[in-house]
Length: 198
Image (cartoon, rainbow, N blue to C red; front, side):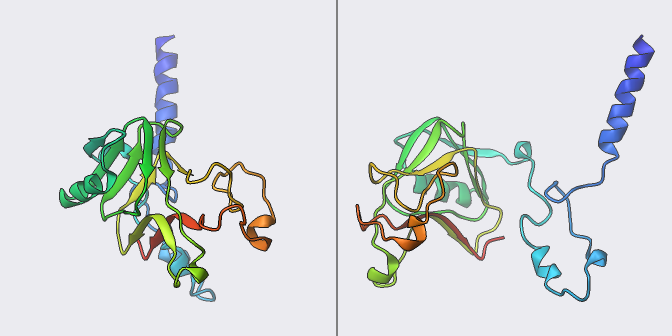
């Protein structure tokens, strides 16, 4: 019986370790020999995602822990200044009243997807009526190795659900594209935008 268990273990271990790396695995790189010369854009599309794969969680150190009520932007700045790592947010609600700038090397990680909530309380008019300025709760520009994971970002500046539904399970509505939000005209806030990030 013991020999059978050992044999099963070796077969399963061999199957697991013998698998080639898949896109998204740590260390994965695109095989450029498989690009079709008829489609030169393949080289650009291969850059999408995380070059070298998504880092394993246990390999990224937790640099700082934050509790509800503590300031988020200074903590992000401190983790970036320390060379990057994880800023771990404890369970609870974090009101976001000012735009947050994500920095190179910082991973914003919640303790629990359902219980760590970033509640966006910003308000802004539609950019066409706001001197061309758009409002974004969380943004990153020209940053590398950043992430936002295991938490919920919710637009909470108004008591109703704006036409541009902020939840993934909301029913699709043509109102988003064809009717202006008349209940409150200052709810045009993007939740998360990355620009030229790697």
